[in-house]
Image (cartoon, rainbow, N blue to C red; front, side, top):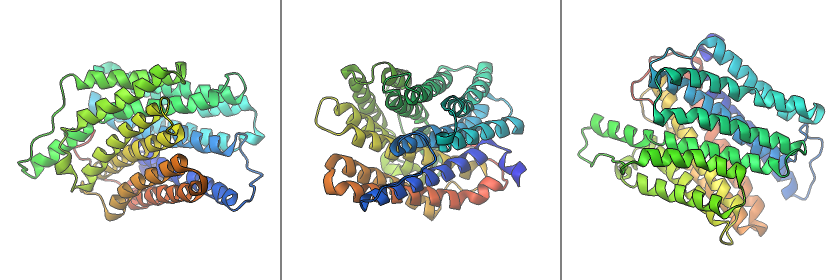
Length: 396
C-alpha cells in the first residue's frame, strides 16, 4: 500500500495536507478552549507563541503540502514530461514531515536545526518543478518557480524573526507566505473557467461560454509576483495595501464572465468560483485595513480560510477524483466541506472584526467548521489516496 501512496504526487501530499489541516487546528481549538474558560495552557513542545505556531503550520505546513501535491501532479502534464519518480516523492515527503516534527518539537531543539529541517522541503520541489518547466517553458507557468522561491524566502524570514535576526520577521514572513500562496492561486485560478467550459461541453449546455478579459493572464501573473515581494519588502506601506486591493478587484472583474451562473448548481465547480472570489475579497479587506478601521487580522483570515483554504480544498478534491478515475462529481461529504469553509471564514471574520465577547465563540466555531471540512475531505478520499485508478484528461 505504501508503494501506491508514493506512486503519484497528489496521493501522499494531499493526504498530508488533509491530516495536517485537521491536526493543527485541533491543537489550536484546544488552546483556545482552555483560554476561553479562563485557564492557561502550558507545557507545549514548540518554542514560539501558540498563535504563531498555528499560523506557521497552516501556511508553511498545510500550504506546502497542498502546493507540492498540485505541482507534482500538474507540471508533468503541462510539459509532457514523465511523472515525478517515486524516490523524489518519498524524499520530498520525508523532508516535509521532518520540518513539521522539528517545528512541533522546537522547544527542545536548537533554532538553527529547526530552520534547516523546516526549510529543506521547498528547494527540492523548486528543483523538480524548474527542471520540468525548462523543457517546455511558458510564461504562464514559469512564474511558479519564482513564487516557490518567494514562498521559501518568506519562511526564512519567519525563522530569522524567531531567532531575533529580523525585527518582526515572524509576522512579515507569515504574511509574505500567504501572499505567495495567494499569488499562485491567482495564476492557478485559470483552471476555473476551463473546467466550467469543459462541463458545459459535456452537458451540451447552451449557457454562454466563460471568457477572460484581454491580457488578463499577464496582468494576474504580475500581481501574483508582486504581492509576496511587496509583503516582504514593504509590509506596512500604503503601496502594498493598494496592490492587494487592485489585485482583488481585478480578480473579481475577471471572473465575472467565467460562467458562475452555470457553476452555481454544480458543487465541484461552484467551490472553485466561490474560493477564488473569497481570495479576492480577502485581499481587498486586508488592503483596506491599512486605510480604514477594518481589522487586518480579519481580512487575512478571509484570505486564508475562504480563499487559500477553499481553493486548495477544491483543487485537491477535483484532482484526486479525476486522477483516481472517480466521477467528477463531489461526494456529499465533500460538497458539505465546500460549504463549511466559507462559513468558517465568515465566523473567523466576525471574531476579529466584532471582537469582545464574540471572539472565542466565533473563533471556536470557525475552527470546528475547518476541522469538519478537512475531516470530510480526508475520509471521503482516503481510498483514492491509497488505491489505484486511471486518470482523467480534464485536469490542471
